[in-house]
Amino acid sequence: MLTHVSQRPVFVPVLTHTSVMYCEVLAHVRKHVMQGRTLDREAVVLELGDALWCLTIAADTLGVPLGDVAGRNVAKLRQRHPG
Image (cartoon, rainbow, N blue to C red; front, top):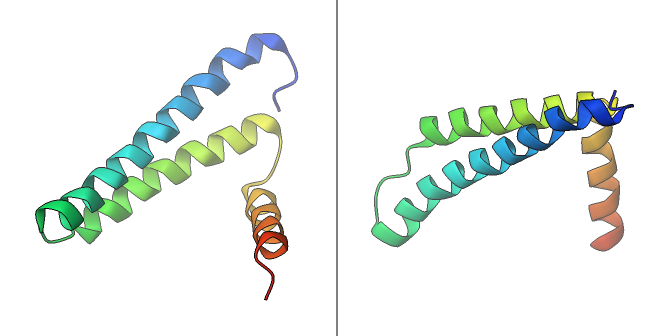
């Protein structure tokens, strides 16, 4: 759990790396949509796995199970988009 200022240096690089992983996913999608290339689904799945790993580390650093993060997100989206 992120309980002390000394732990913050770990948290920021993990989140930065997460955004890099999402950019990698978007790069594959962009090439597919904008350049007409075949979507390399395996590469996208591998990049999503890297992003998931980073999110897991970030959630763990905060002391929050990743399942709780997902559940809270579902609840937020249901409230935002009812029906």
